[in-house]
View 1 (tube, rainbow, N blue to C red):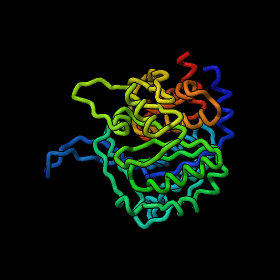
View 2: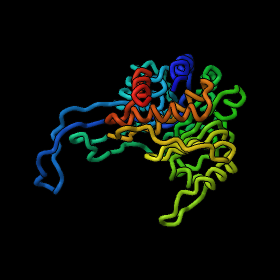
View 3: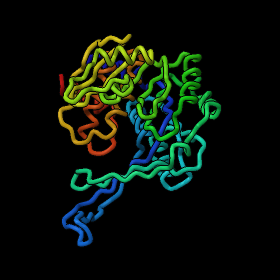
Length: 325
């Protein structure tokens, strides 16, 4: 990856806007050495608790960690979780814009025992609580869209993104000549069209394409790519395939499959956010799709070797690539 130093230098000059479902990722770390007398469940002796930004916030953390400037817009509640989430982002010099609402900050609590996730506890309000109209989105984001180089729509199906505001943000991005990408969640069925990049995983790509596979049937990559281009007219489609790598498509045609770069996997939490952030940064910096995919694949390879929601730095990426060479 001889182009890496020059690409990282270009990335350091970029400014990215992330809009979507921000959340607080809370980790409770401890050990379990006995079973509760009240029920057949382990008793956790808590050692410590940690917090970081998750969802769209994790996309923003990855963008900032790779050297670009970033602003993230989403719902930050007026509660302890909202304050912790804002602080985690501001600590990394990420600007925050809060959408209107009166719900609680979305929190995912993971209980970790001996480096294994025992369970996850989610706290959130109803999607309607986080609703943002097209007019509200424009008032909040128009100035930032004009100033940034790219917009990332990070959908976790929590309610911040909807058809009206995605359509309006896309119109503003197109009018300003900005790169715009979406990480979609099919159960929300957003009516997006004409974006520069979407990054579904294999199952999400099938749902977006409206293709249901018979039991034990193989993944029909060509049909999925053709259908997605027909429906959404996205310039670039990158389907993340987990251990199988990434499938690259443009114009409804398969271009290439990039094998996974991961040497060891401890935790896949947030790996999709890392891939999305790296792809957007590389493509916005002028990289070709295949080069951008290799860059994103390497970034994700670093992150999955870490425990918990994590990011990758330019130094870690360069060391990782040097080891692979």
